[in-house]
Image 1 (cartoon, one colour):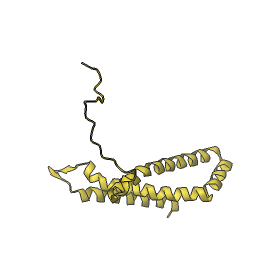
Image 2 (image 1 turned 90 degrees about the vertical axis):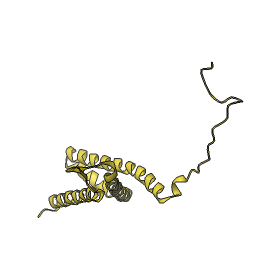
Image 3 (image 1 turned 135 degrees about the vertical axis):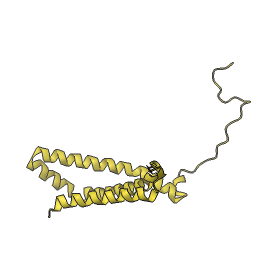
Image 4 (image 1 turned 45 degrees about the horizontal axis):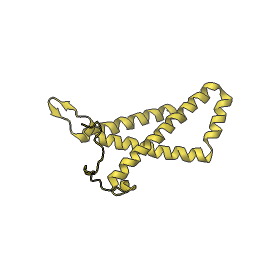
Length: 138
């Protein structure tokens, strides 16, 4: 008995249909999937940018001013605007998936998915308003 069962002359090959490199452009749902995966890169950039901001603040006034000067350059602004759009897309698609990812039962009945999604959006709006209130003051 042979240890490997690879291809031999008498062993048929698997039937595999060729898939286009651009398979993800065939349907809108595939494109949304790929964009959601790509959005993770921009989430990482956003976290890195915020960590750089915290580091600049911790280093003193001069370092903070240099960071502000760098962050107002056109390439960084464009990257941050792109990142903002992808982070919002990431959040919205996650909130749409949340009712499928978690099943909540209240008094033995399943909570409707629309309620779970709505609660996510409501908490997001409250968090946004709270941060805006803290930053902008009264």
